[in-house]
Length: 411
Image 1 (cartoon, rainbow, N blue to C red):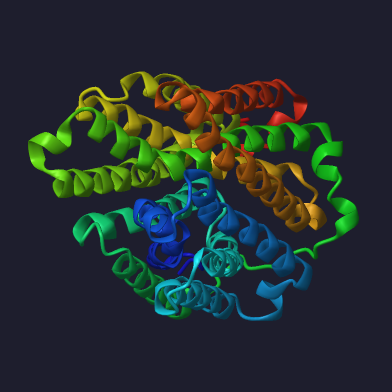
Image 2: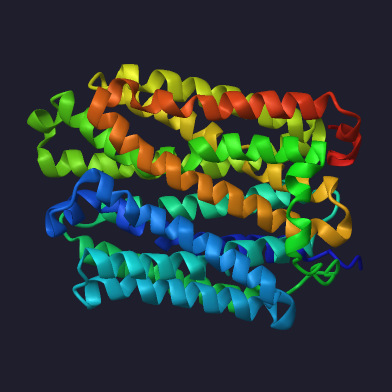
């Protein structure tokens, strides 16, 4: 029997574990209106409830890489520990009746803990695949995308005003994810030690032309992605309200429908990631990324024009955006891993992650400031330069000689 004969049950279980384990990421974002009222904070201050998770993730990823935790300890133990710690810090916000400052500290801790979930899940996924790694990684990215959307579904199914119940429920999902990862996180037949992290090699990410272009594509993608995930739920709610929907169905029903729509808009990216993974393995990473960036950038440019119009129109455009905005995500990491010398792969992937998530701090915080100035109609247009820059970078990479190293020569 081939060593990877039973790989798909493991990959599905790993994906489910990541889906559940990553659910605390947007737990506070899902209940931002209630938290803004609870703590009397502005939308700009509320942005920090997501930004601290982003920053914590960068810190956690760098510490994990420096200590080489997934090789020092069994990866499934690291995964389970990260999910449990994320669940705990998330639940402590309502349990301790935390104020805004304490909540930010706990959100930072959640981000650091989640850095032990997704990257370790990615490493475990890679130990089970070779030729179909694009599909497998796409499936994992899809799972974490649905996981990040999960708090909006929890909110939609429960009481829209009971923000503490949403936080507790999401923490329960993360605990279940950690348990699943503990039992399902077995390494596959292609497991190899991770090359150690070296500070001195971080400069190669921008020093080598092909790596620089792959990272430029990733940065353009990240400028758009997390800002969209963070603020589209509030955009949808505000658009529903501006359309007069509350007068027709009632305020509570409108809020539940907005939360359900937010879950669908973010969660459909899971399907986009899987489809893009299949396409990239056959058509090439750069071409797949370019198409995804063009579609998502177009949606960013035009969705504001739908504000206050038919809820079906708004949700329809948002679903296309949600499908495409994350579809290319796995292709940038895969490109860096294929373009790097093996001894530098760990350092290059960590560097890419750190740069991308640090950039999201700017775009996430930028959105509410722009919205206060120009309103929702033109706010998301400020994200368009990201996809444009990403398309330029991936087109240049496709035309380079190093494109032959990508997707087994498909570019």
